[in-house]
Image (cartoon, rainbow, N blue to C red):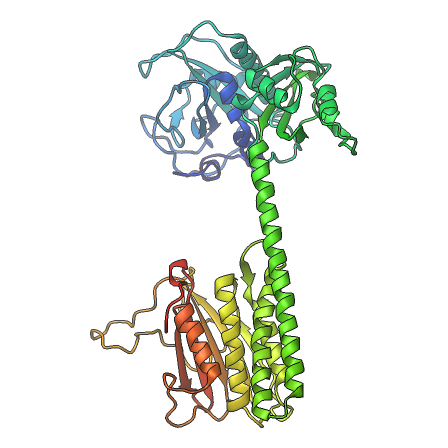
Length: 556
């Protein structure tokens, strides 16, 4: 299904500014459909060089642009948007977006375009077996007519209208006039709040002085929850709303102005534990403000839920902050204990514990500043790498560095990965690069997220990463299988003395490497590979799945 933008750019001569106006109209025309109890279909003229089929009912092809105006005949029309009412039966159950018709097939549209006025003449149509009343409303932006709205009302359920329906229809007529005069959507109006009130949520009609001339039952009920028990009709809406919400604290000065119908805006008011969202649409017809429509919606439950979520998020961040403080206290105590020890092995063990606790504290510190459990791990990695460089011996003369990007990771991945990275860096500094100059680099790359290439393009990887299972026997000529899903591959590489003879990850007695294996293989369900680097040194490849179903604790 082509979008509104696609149809306009492929088949019309409308400019980008015209397109923005149409987008603003379509984003808000549910209001007109509901007030009218009618379907809306937006037609725009085809460019004059557009090719039309013989029956004039299929999609238009491309053609050369040519300037169109309302004084010139147009070859046809293309429907670029459609809206059905939520207040009544639809006249067109089928989708008509993309339909192309020749000039003359929709006579009222042609008249509205040519004469630049709303056209209501004509008898009901019976094309689909139901009576449908058709009207055409020209869409104006400034002095330019952009297209025509076809308003189609299903008359099969016609009956004597109630006062509510009469108010709806009168308001719809005023809005249609504003569209034809280029006054709706309101030029320069601020973007609407998410989920603006709809017609069925509650509607009030105001006169020029801001007094209520009609309030729907839902609107009356909403104001009763705010604390106004009597009928709203005849009351100044801005004044009574300001009085209801007067808590003695400073109040927004524009509230009474907006709710008197003089300015288009959305506001929220609160009283007696109830919260109501209001939207004011001034009605300006023929250059004169004749009143306003005010839509209202009770959003108490929604806002309380939002507040509960905000409180929960703040509590979680505070917990992370306190965990970070406690971990730093534990690290400080371990540091003090290490200074008192006379046994070098014991002091070294406590120093390792301090580094491990510190890497976890860094993750919790980052989580204390984020609104969710997602972390930009590049900052974590840089701090872990810096911490490893600071604690390296003066004889090592190695400054670790990072290439590539880890991206955003969930907290359940970030914490074990930070600990594993700390252990691998420390292991490289203590064993691979002990008492020598050298290079230590961390390279990160993500796979399975839309990249064309599987290799870390532009990232200086030492050696070549081989996917797990790539060396297993396969059919002649077949490509090795890449791991499925989203994955993060991290390489910790050094140009030190290399792996010791007979090194076996499964039987190593190093506590640090056992921790790494437990975290990567057991907790994150990933792969861990130690191998010699070409030209000397060691590469450690950490391959972690990022899809949620992989993140489950298990025994390595």
